[in-house]
Image (cartoon, rainbow, N blue to C red):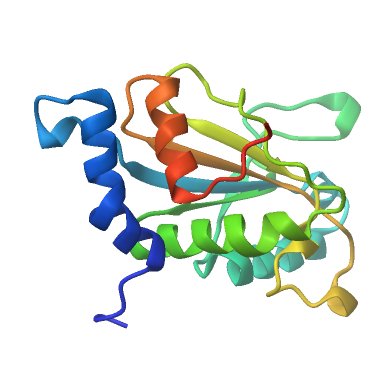
Length: 183
C-alpha cells in the first residue's frame, strides 16, 4: 500500500495544481488550494431507544470510509426527545491523506452516480470560506454496503475542508477533481 498513490492525488499533483496556479495567478505555490480533510458524520437518533442501532451504523460507516468512526455525544438534554446530556447519538470520521482521496474518488465516481434521479450536487453548498458540504440521504449508494443486511436506511453528511480562501477557488478545485456539480 505504501507505493500505491490514489488516482485523485496523482491528478491533483500532476495537472490540477498547475491549472489552479495559472487560473488564479498565485505568487507562491503555498497559496494553491488543496483538500485538507473530509469529515463524514452520521446522526443516529434512534440510538436513544436502541443501542444496537449505533453499533450497526458504526460498522456501516467504518465499511464506507475505511476508518473506525468516533461516537459523538449529545451536548445538552432535550426532554421532548428523551435525550440526556452525554448520550451517544452520532458518529463521525475525519479522513486525511490517502484515505481521504480514496473516499472522495469513490464518492464522486461510484456512489453519487448511483443516487436515484441524480442531476448533480448543489453548487451553492459552500460556506463562504472555501469548504463544501454535501448531504447523502442513503448509505446504500456505496457499493461496500450489502443491501440485504441493512436494518434501516440512514443518511450522512460529508464536509470537504479546503485551504481555499474563497468559494470560487474551492469550486474550481473540486470541479477539476471531478465533483459533479449541477449545471
